Length: 200
Image (tube, rainbow, N blue to C red; front, side, top):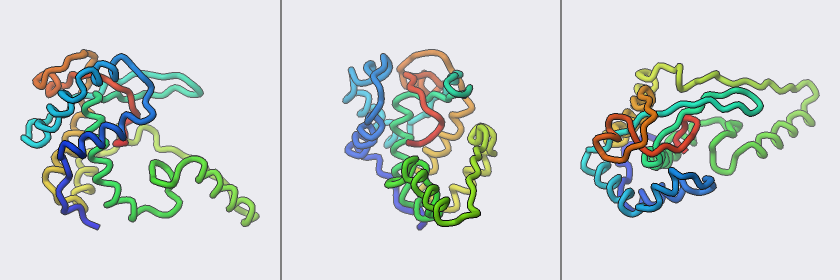
């Protein structure tokens, strides 16, 4: 499947992306601030996306220490809504290209399903084994120009490619300032909500 259809940046879809982003999030001061003027914020985002004036802010970074030390990248809430918009656009294009046993961040998949699938193989194949691996800081270290070129092979919609490009380019900008004007957002400022550099 090639992504030739235009990405839907209608107001209804932006609201849908907001609700998908909001689901399961713990309440934070940043989230409450954004929700205080929710209709205004989403309408401004709608205008920016449709008028070609949307700018992706930077990513703030911080260290968390639970069972291991991890560096977490943080994008603004408005940018996370765009991430969700892009994620929902990309999913039907790429999901069918994945092997069955890719279990992360896919509908009807997940950790429990992966564990049950692993247990099935261990029970039925006596010489099977489990190898646990991770690509350390993949998005930080992958060549972003090559990443964009690979995405461009399947995505032909210029608007979608523009949003993807801004998301990737924004990763190289960092800020610690909380501001909310369009000009300041374009320079990498915004209301921050943590994530781990994904489009969900």
